[in-house]
Image 1 (cartoon, helix red, strand yellow):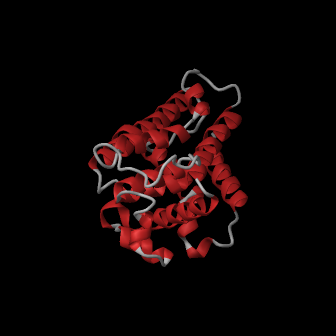
Image 2 (image 1 turned 90 degrees about the vertical axis):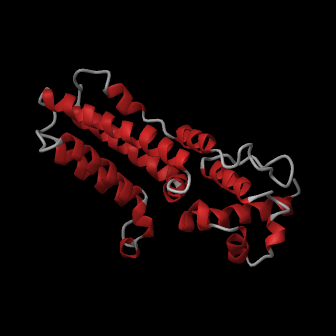
Image 3 (image 1 turned 45 degrees about the horizontal axis):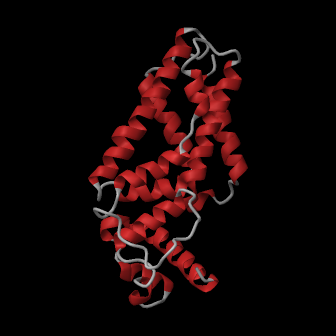
Amino acid sequence: MAPRAKARLDDIIESATKVFSQKGFRRTLITDVAADLGIAPGTIYTYVESKDALFHLVVERASGVTTPPETLPVRTPDGGVSTKDTIQAFTRTARLTHLTAALHEEKAEDITEELTAIIDEQFDLVDRSRRLINLIERSAHDLPGLHTGFYAKGRRPFLRKIESYLDARIAVGQLREVPDTAATARFIVESVAWFANHRHGDQDTTNIDDESARQVCVDMLVHGLLP
C-alpha cells in the first residue's frame, strides 16, 4: 500500500474509532465518519466496502493489529459484523496470568505481593485495551452476539474468578472478612475500570497522571483487603 493511502486509511480508522465509541455501531453512519474527517463519504468507500468492514477494521486496530490490509477496499466480513472476531480480538489482549496462578494455590506465600500483582495486571489490561473495551461496551447493545460474548461469557466469569479468589484467601485468613465477596469483586473491577479507563473521559481528573492513577488504585484496593 502506498504511504499516502496508508496515512489516509489510518486517519479513517482513527475517526471511525472515535465515532463508533461515541454512537455505537447502529447509530454510526459512514457520513458521520466522513464529516469528522471533512471528506466526502465516497472517499471512505474507496477504502472500506461497508460500515461492517469499517467496524471490523477498527476493532482489529484497537486490538493491536497494525498490518495494513493487502487490498482496498476492505471487504465486508462474511455474515456482516463478526462478533466472534471482535471477542477474539479482545481475548488476544486479556492475559491475566497472576489471577489464574493464584486460583491454583491454596495459600499465598506473600499475600501483599500476590494481590498487588493481580490488581496491577488487571489495571494494565484495561489500560492497554481501553479503546477496544469502549468500542465493545458502546456497541454491545446493538449486536446481541457481542453482548453475550463480552458480558455473559467474558466479564461475568471473570467476576466469579475474583470472587473465588477472595473467598479462598479469606478462608485461610490472608484477606479480611468483607460483607459480600460478590459485591467486593465488582468493586475491584469497577475501581480498576474507572482509574484505568473511564477517568480519561472525566474533565475533573486532568490533575491525575497515569502513574498516579495506577499507584493509588492498586494501593487502596490492596490495603483495603488486607487484614
